[in-house]
Amino acid sequence: MQTNGTILIIEDENNISDFIATSLRAQKFKAVCTKTAREGMELAASLCPDVILLDLGLPDMDGMEVIRSVRVWSMLPIIVISARSREKEKVEALDLGADDYITKPFGVSEMMARIRTAMRHGAILAGMGAPSEVFVTGGLQIDFGKRSVRAGGTEVHLTQVEYKIVALLARNAGQVMTYDAIISHVWGPYMDDNNRILRVNMANIRRKLEKNPAEPHYIHTEVGVGYRMEAEEE
Image (cartoon, rainbow, N blue to C red):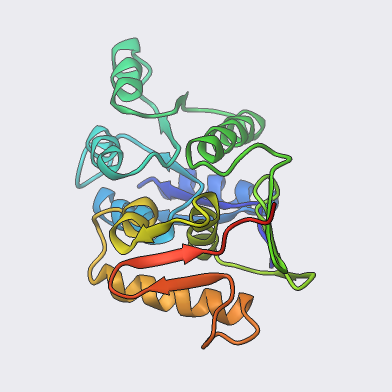
């Protein structure tokens, strides 16, 4: 099922987490929940969510440390959702790299508006282009605004991670993207055996995009270096 995006909820209070997740799923978002900071950081790296909703009062680590850690490797949009209402703490969270700060309690409409804004900013930072921008090479078409991919005229469903890999390569079409550059952009430093995970995702991407995955036309392998997207048509 096509979703509007993936939201990672790092919140240890079940009633709040369940309320947020239910509200998001009603709006056709995929909601993934965790109660701890450490698992949240691991999920941020593995899922590459569109937005992170972060509580500051977590049982194993202060949420401020989560912001600091994620910002070392990623500009994933982070919205703090916290009962802490003092100006000093809001300023600290924003200075550390949070994109927004919502004080509990809050309404669904406000939360959704903040998420939409964060996603727009995240798309710009990720280099996904303006809403009208479309990449075309051969029979492959990528609409960055709609986050949609078509191959041979047929819409292709990619996972969030697969789409981010394809979009990154398309934004740098004609250039070789090293394995390390792709991994850093998509996963950050919190994954074990990153090259293997990248190879698995690339195999899935080629199976979905290419007529013959063994002889790829769109995404080429530069052995021992990385991958290169076929240059965009003039």
